[in-house]
Image (cartoon, rainbow, N blue to C red):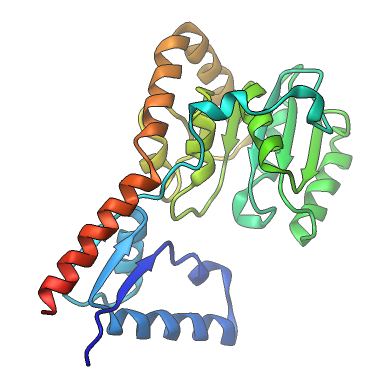
Length: 268
């Protein structure tokens, strides 16, 4: 019996992150899955484009189905300040993710030297070599009082930092989707992103983008973006919240159901 096989490709970042036998294994693994597939779903147009650039995708149905936003407007009221272990006493920029090279967090630390009276808060597990690099940069720049590496945090902690930050920053170099972008938008916060890979696709027209990572240029983009946001706050907040609500797991589930129906019909 020929059982239909649906493949979802989130990204092919391993092409830049793996080496040697591990890379060969991942390439062959994905090639075999692609050959077996009756259809392919991608989590972004970028993920689709990047897969086509590196793999021989057969002439089969392809779909882009975006991930859902894990938060909603009710999240803003689900946490109390006294439950948080670290509460910044100054306006702060928030960022979150795996503490690995591709997240590019060190550029935020370097940018902070050109910003006044702002704290940087980064969340993510600190058991990586890249975390040690961040710690060294903080020490070298004498920013111990202005940069806080939180380590892993709870969902309620995350909501607190999204809700109370001055802005959300995500200078990542490689993203198949970029869920934290939507999470921050849920709270109407100004969003500053790398212009790499899928982030412009997810961030949309009202996010602010870094096209290079020179720290002074990044600070200039941040200052200009914050000024634009403050001058048009209600417009931007509404745009962010509305965009965050366009990405739902319910919508993704319905689209997947339609894909399954198409596959079954085509293989009947």
